[in-house]
Length: 134
Length: 135
Image (cartoon, rainbow over the protein chains, first blue to last red):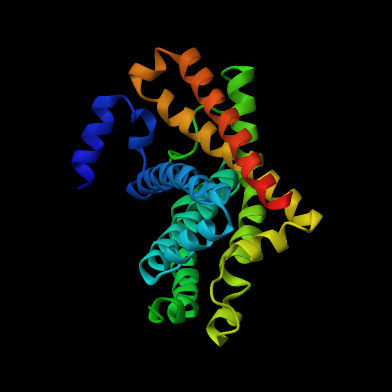
């Protein structure tokens, strides 16, 4: 899967120096972009959903009730995973920008993934009643 | 062997004042957003979880819950700041990604103006939605 993506980015001019480093660094960069773009799309959907308040409190509650059904709780968990990874990797990028941990950036990437995974396992565990109540 | 720092921006200091400020504000807004999104997620998704599980509350998010929250100045500040910063951070990031694509990179001015207008329009609309809860 990596090779075709590298070829695509190389052909589109999106690659340049970013593809020359470690595979982990490339994945960190790609995941940051993908989660970032996903979160921008979600942001507009979120504002759209909240704007249903303009149709009245009952309409807002009806829409929100649908969005709290198990299927959407699972989507919420995916959203939380994307936010968490994007934030943690963002901190890692800032640290590297400041010259902190440059030699350990791959380990920091794995730490971001591990922390995201562990946190989301815990969050999912506490959210199970919401998923099960459907 | 030192791994090249290949996944942080090449558009940092040293190109133009605009790219420096975009790089700087992207990081500052990102750091502030970590706490604001944390508060927003906690209030919206977790603070009422115990009540919902116990059956004392039907839904985590409902009109009355949001309206009650937005009677407090702190949350009005958090929600308006969040709206402004998340739009800035998200659209600035989108702008950076778009400008790495050669066809868009040849139209920097149009991309910048288009994304700025989108951000301003969305902020105005989002602020009006928030005011619908507050007023």
